[in-house]
Image (cartoon, rainbow over all chains, first blue to last red; front, top):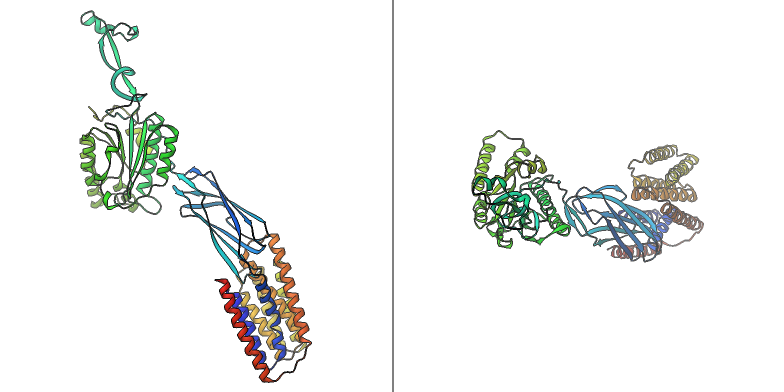
Length: 426
Length: 160
């Protein structure tokens, strides 16, 4: 029962009691308009509300920051409703941009309401929305409220930068032509070696100089074959290494980096798989092309940091899930106890690249402290840890997240960034 | 439209009570009604959060005072009904916010029917004279209170 109804009932009671107590019939008569008013509300109070509710989201799959249109349609399948208050509730992470999210209206039988508005959403997979729908009598004394859940699905994948091509050199490649040097002689661009001329070798591949210098035999230049490779991207989603604030977190940077790397590897024709290692292990099996990119982006959309005591350190990482001697890209802020695991991966023959969002500079920038002894100690400890990993032949990128990832990749990993320094696989 | 009607209703309610009190030479009450009416109008005109229940309660109090001063019930009923309608419209505006024409039209229509019905029944009732002794009156009152209690319990259950 709503407070205004209680107020009117109290007034009626007070007027009647006063009239009787003072023996003034005229006073009792004054209660009549109020009684009629309450009776009208009782007669018009909402019966059971039967509504057909539908939600459409366009597009259902979008990148972070893209305006998304939500359309909520209601059709009244019951009797007319004097006042229907509709309020659509946004899930956490979704922000209203434009349009009406709520409305109060009169709705006749078989009448229809449409609410259309625009939102933008943070990275995530959203599959449950609620709309509060309240039917009231025309005086607002009685209310019949219900929550309607609509199962429309919205997947917002991370917004990630477009990267230059990344140099990788796994020990083993696959059989198809691609951009990665395969450590095998054949047709390609980079010089690989020479061998004795065999009939049928193209004339332009004959190494004339070599023949004249040595024994007047003919030799043929051979080039390094270029193939595609298996690339496994591992995103570290352990809560203990991913620090953050409500507005920013290392994990968000890691997810964006993983998405960008997965896309560039897929664009090169490689077979890419994904493992999100945190509260559990969410895996996308190896695949090629756009479909695989969408699978990876969907998995990254729903990724969150979590705690699992069985997966507290990287020792539980199922590296055997990745093809032998393939390229592994680990995106992790790293903890000191992760070093042996990474070294072991390298020892098992994988080419390992570590993209490490720097938690020390991230935290220092949060508090604006780059000069205290604590910062210097943490910085030195991290530098030592990264050095240990580098010495095992792992390619390490220490990414200070205030720098754009594409710039870091261009400077440190792209094919135009100078000679390849890792000795992976040699 | 609702805003204009609301301001008109507040003005009308205040005018009725001012007129009635002036006729019966209760100048202080008349001045008070005028002051309260003006304040309510100003608050509603500026769309500030007024307290319509408080203003309505004031006019109910003025009606009861009018009965005690032997003022005509018909005028008091009119003033009370008009202030009741004003209270309802003030709540309606606060509850709904942006008014859609269809909703506004339906509400005003139903409110007019309810208000006029209440006023007519009141007027008719004011012409009836029934003489009952105190015991019967007390019994009727007890019955009314019991019925009211049951009605409240029923409505509360319906609301849940």
